Length: 175
Image (cartoon, rainbow, N blue to C red; front, side, top):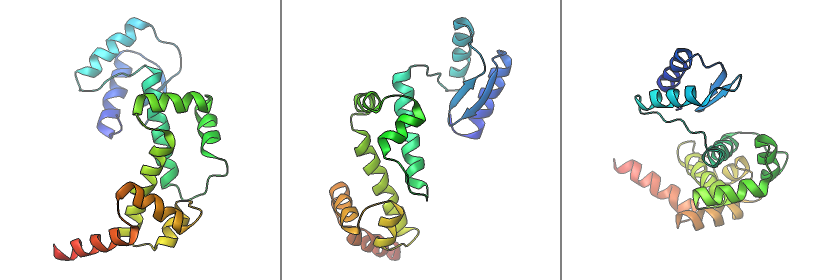
């Protein structure tokens, strides 16, 4: 529930069921008070009529929050002043070992692997659509060196960043 239309539907249903809330951000509703199980059940049933789903299971919510925070970090221009594990623990108020194990269990990959995937995806965007150099891209994504970025890029995509960019440019000119 990230699209504006879905958010509006949820707001209307919250009002209909008189469920007090503070905010709705990225599909997460922050309530002002505890709501009874019956009211939550009815709210969830009504959501289903709009092809929306009420997720209350922490095992599902936490990995989604982790992914959202990582994506925000990858697209953020500022460098992170603390390491990722401390950042996630502080933001989510859980021990990193718990978060890491839960994420791996639910997603089938580690937090670190997910971070690398997102950084490489962002590197592709920076190299192609923003036409940055490999050095600029490595700096923007907080890599220690261009060699480190190149190694991870090749491991994830099977080709070097230079070859990827060249193929992208050649394919774009053929169209």
